[in-house]
Image 1 (tube, rainbow, N blue to C red):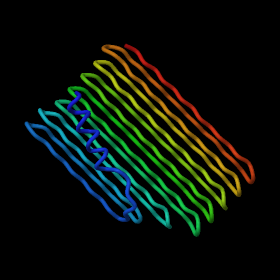
Image 2: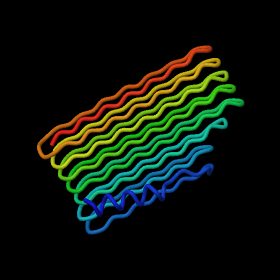
Image 3: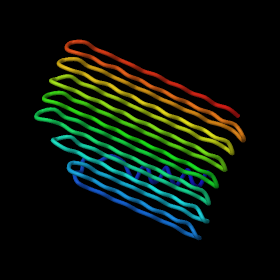
Image 4: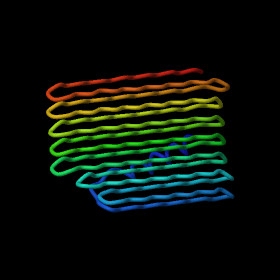
Length: 239
């Protein structure tokens, strides 16, 4: 498990953010009867990276999609690693900026397992209108060893007419022979000169034959000259 985590960490550094446009990279590696599939799609001002690796009969699937339109930039990264288990990683980033507005969507999903099941979903969406600015970041990580781990993260930001909206969503789940679920949603919206910030973090860790679950929802809205801020953290550990 430690070797697998080191490999995943290495891939995550290789898939770091960069200001490149219209770039898609997909890598699939399988050894000793394993099966690996990687799909990457980049549309417009976007970068998409998908990496999948499997060994000893394991199955890894990595899907990454990034869409950047109208001066918006999207970056999506997906990594799936499986050692005689099943790992599925899905990452989606969607950004739209209109006129002078800017929108940045950053999504990262990592799923890794040894003899178990790990599913990670990450979705980031940002909208900027006129001079508005919207920033969304979604990170999802699922790790399992002879168990089942599910991690689901979603961040949505909208900015209009000079307003600013920022959403950060982070979901983490890890299990050793049990089951761990983590679901996080962060939504922020700003209009006129308003500013909205949403930050959600969910962590769940379980031991053998145990179940741990964490659900987080952070929502903030600001209209005209108002300001709104929402931060939610949830942690559950069962050994």
